[in-house]
Image (cartoon, rainbow, N blue to C red; front, side):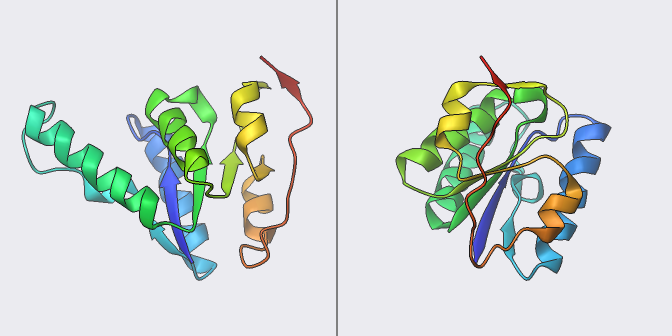
Length: 138
């Protein structure tokens, strides 16, 4: 199963979280595409850098079977990836250990909501059980 791991990786806390999820998902036998590992070699911020990252990530989302998205920090790029994946009818698993209120556009588009690393470890990615979000929304 091909998994696109969406989430911010702009500071050490975010990188640590993404790295931990990469390991957990890989150990569950999943083929994980993590944009953190496929950053463009062009100069940061250049048009070529932007374009290459965008095209690479869009192609990876299209190729994926499911999207695993980190909601922590509500990163705009991650939220765009979730919306794009939803439009492609991909199952979306939201991982959130930080935010106390979740946007209704995310709660209505998700297939499963996981709020701890233990729940990720226990989740059956072969059967993809539906787990709805039951908290506060905006």
